[in-house]
Image (cartoon, rainbow, N blue to C red; front, side):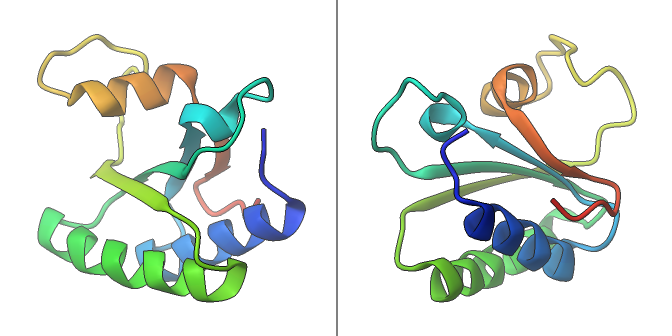
Length: 114
């Protein structure tokens, strides 16, 4: 994983503050791959917020994270908190969410910071 401890702690704290204690945070994409170089910070955030509230919190959270770790490109994907098989190939779940669940590194789940 190519995030500093400061970046990881900041991301988890900010996302818990914006999405609630039950948020599940997954880092995916090139930053989850120690052999890759460069790249933006791709995050899957699964929460119990309704889609409209999640969208508003997404905008606020990205801004707050950038203010604290510097102006980096952050792609934040939101999805409902999954109660089923997180690795399901259910075609109703967007491909990016399925891929993040399968290949990503979980940073936080259900109230655990970092």
